[in-house]
Amino acid sequence: MPSVLPLGDPVPADGGFPPSVLQELPTRADKPLGLYVHIPFCSVRCGYCDFNTYTASDLGPGASRQSYPDTLIAELEFAASVLEASGAPARQLSTVFFGGGTPTLLPAEELARILGTVQRLFGFVPGAEITTEANPDTVTEHSAEVLAQAGFTRVSLGMQSAVPSVLATLDRTHNPQNVPAAHDAARAAGLQTSVDLIYGTPGESLQDWRSSLEAAIALQPDHISAYSLIVEDGTAMAAKIRRGELPDIDPDDQADKYLLTDELLQQAGYHWYEVSNFSTARATRSQHNLNYWLDSDWWGAGPGAHSHVAGLRWWNVKHPAAYAQRLHADTSPGHGREILDAEAKVLEHLMLRLRIAEGLDIAEYNGLPARTASGTAAISAADLQNLVREGLIEQEPARPSSSAPEGRAVLTLKGRLLADAVTRRLLG
Image 1 (spheres, rainbow, N blue to C red):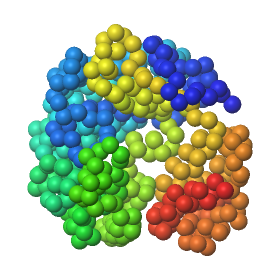
Image 2 (image 1 turned 60 degrees about the vertical axis):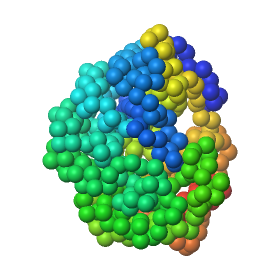
Image 3 (image 1 turned 45 degrees about the vertical axis):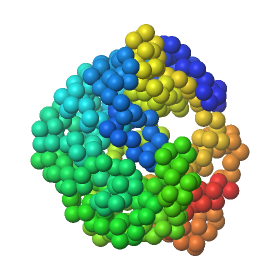
Image 4 (image 1 turned 90 degrees about the vertical axis):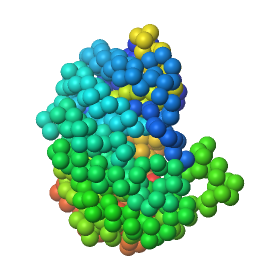
């Protein structure tokens, strides 16, 4: 086993990898490499959001909306130099994802310039997926055309809801009537489209949620994400719930809304491939998110962004001004790093594979060196069949086959609602 770095181990100024990672990197030459690009600016901070975002347009030297692209490019150049210094075989990017915040608060021309730098430094594999998140109010025919010409292939629209009262509770300020216009502009530019929705907002009725689903389906996007609202400590919404100004989240209500989600999306030709994500075809799945769930590698650029390369995880300083200061000093913006211990690796492998439609390959899981090192018991055929009988695991994938000699654990609809419980059961 490689040495395990503790949570929060300092990142060296040159960003260099520890010896165990340098040894592991050559074996991952065939693993996809992704890039996440964080744009931390928002016009309004939503009450439920705990992401590393800021409403001010000027957050200090190197951290204004005007200067931020150059600061971000400095980290991209730093990243390229760290990867080159590792001596590992060069890998082109299979996915790029601009998230935030609201990336499209920056001019489309600036996003195009950043992407041009990414292509120059790393290159793209044929058919690379290149996505930007977007607030529907910020997408025009012109901006969509600029993005498409620059090489973006996909736009993910933050619709969240079609019901004005629900949007108000979420502190979302976009005009719901702009969602179809933004979607049409992206389509006209030749971009794939995804729509993000949130269910379970305090005060949202089942009919409200049905209306949002139907509005999203009517757009005929390639992909729909439907996330249950999670109220995080420290957010404005959490404070309102604590003061009794909003009702608390109801897990039974969220379960009913997930069941409706699956029913309506399946009827409309969308198929789940991850618990919260549905697409019209395998080709329209979010490959970038699949990289996260399948233990691939990615570099996260921007303040607070997280990265993972060959088992090493690190995260950048959160404030954009501190982030800029480090890069201007030619120093890594990394704040801390870790390598998971054996027990955490086993749990993560099990939890993430269970979330996707292909499920958990039992033979692969039972053969994990980390499972043996952690002392975690193997999953037996009896364990799997017990979950099949309880309606939590699909019967057919659980049968042994040439591709999965010990079967696969694929969640049923009921199992998706109880994914955490199934994970605990399989861990024994």
